[in-house]
Length: 79
Image (spheres, rainbow, N blue to C red):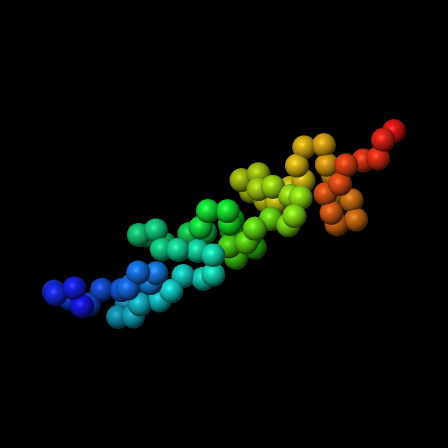
């Protein structure tokens, strides 16, 4: 109660007559639940890229001079 009407507590957002919380690793930005810094929407869930991978704006990919080999980002051996 803010003195005038019921409002949602911090970390919750209004949905009809209820207050709901955003999924893990996301927060209400005033319009929708959005991933917090360091997390990206991957397959519908706010997650971090696996170790050795970076977010390219669309998906997790291997960094420069590394390639996905046997499920991990690795550099090619010399020669």
